Length: 601
Image 1 (cartoon, rainbow, N blue to C red):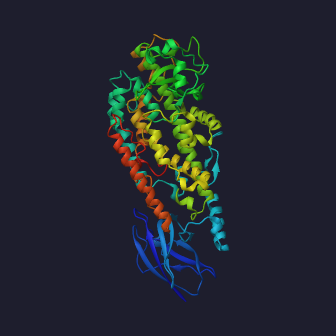
Image 2 (image 1 turned 120 degrees about the vertical axis):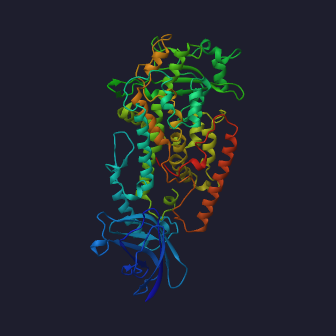
Image 3 (image 1 turned 90 degrees about the vertical axis):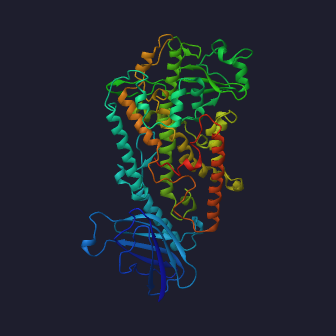
């Protein structure tokens, strides 16, 4: 006979259960029968820690595993019409001799079933010295691989989880109840506001830029107001390639592409006297943003009208000293010629503004399909699903862890063929694009601080870089390219989601009326602004970077590492906030307290 004390912790917010719970203790000698955890009252209430005493009929030897059983109560009146779910934080098992053993759980158990837990010390497979531990690891992986299966959503896309709808997801990978309710409440209020204003169902054109202010007052932010005030300025247009919602495309230009025949005479007014394109190319002060991947892409139909797309090239100039980055020239197609003029800052106001707006529309399409959806969501799902399928719960890594859908799909297929590992690693991406020293590039500066590969792990450099890449892309990079979506689009002309007229093929024809007619219709504008507002706003239940409410680690060493990481993030945050106090437009998207631990929306 051996007496064990069992302490159980239940999560808050509706995580309790009426079901009956029992445990079997698996030791080196044998496994005990299931022993009920019953104190002759209601057990396992939300946000509670409860103690139970169990007596084993025989000595099972050194404890290896804890098997948890959950079943509905025997009395029919207490049974729920739907499977009762219980979120258990952890079990603590205190044997007759020796100290307590902690078994982290942090999982939902839905309906009847059982779950096997290992003691909380993190282990890789070679550390499982007992055959029962090796067997349990294999059985857990087999169960995970059966539960989380791959499928191809679309040809050429990354594989994803094989589930038809969100309702089919396991509780452990769903939004929390609070987060889910918040999201739909926010969406409902936003749609209701637009409906009341009479904008949501209006399919026609905007009557004027002035009328667009009616929608601009919807949930505006300081960054959105800055965009409204400065969207026509060249310096602000260029700055968005560095610190806007798509800060990953600009690269240093060492030579002009043959299909972008910019001449010295075209750009003399911006470069000034005593220099030339060749001289600036040799200095490294010219940069290019090339949206060639959009060339010939399938476009959408909105309100029965076909939409249009462009694949522009934009040449930019970093003025001497700490001067602003400025646009030099824009070509709206990849094929130069009489029908594809090169637009310049010296052109008529509406010609130049329309050309810049086409570039912003290309930014919207590239960002939403590739930078955001593919790189920050679809690839993150691949990493997550691979983790769920290949790493058991006790593994250390698991614990740290206007073009329409057809156009989006086509872009993703094209980009998947070009995608390579270095593009996902921030330091290599910055070096490859040659933007190490361009001033005022806060996405680079803040991102490099957060990336931070520890130099003491050089012997495992490749593994550390890979894990860092996954964590960075699923947390910091997602924040950088997601949190600012509403800021950029709240004043729609700054980031139009679609264009209703084709790109101009000659200069001197653009007018205010033609500019407005090119922009998306009222209802499409409302739909996109509401969607991006929702995607930019965390719906509660936040988990900032470095915050780990689920205490999977039981050893002191990883706990010290977590504390050191949190301290480092706090230092980064203080430095970012100090810098931002001196900026006209603060860059906040990579301030650690504002970064979610994962792709959470």
